Image (tube, rainbow, N blue to C red; front, side, top):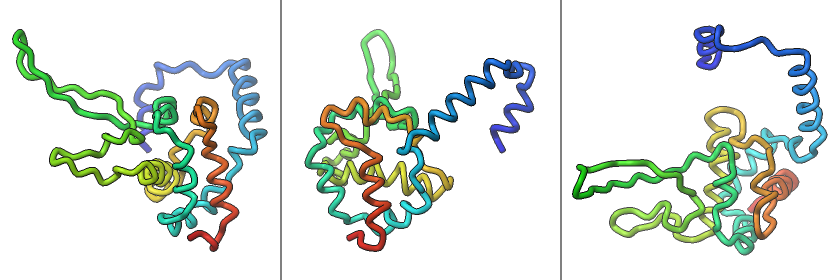
Length: 175
């Protein structure tokens, strides 16, 4: 709805696609559908995520993760941030927002020192649950473009789609 409204309002700012644009679009769509990793059935996976909060898969995955955060910094849909307040002798208080990662051990640390996601396993689970369950709960699509950058640049070769395929295969056996 909002996208349609935007396009109607600013229609004069957009050019109609050329024949070359259409050919390029077709090639991109073909390459996406050729990638088996984008063919996961998220509607099938989501019920397993609903039941899989305590699954041993999270612990297994967290053993390999080094919490570098590259997966989140390269993700086109990740949007975690932190707020900083600073003052200087030449200016008054300034509040600014910086990009952050939910994979950082300090990301959820509160002012009193409590950290609800102190352990790596809870941070990994949160990232997956946010992208493939919570976001899906609200919008009926995963919060993932399927670009694979998180996999391509992970220094320990964690494959998001591999875990999702395991969840898809686990079915009612998820613990």
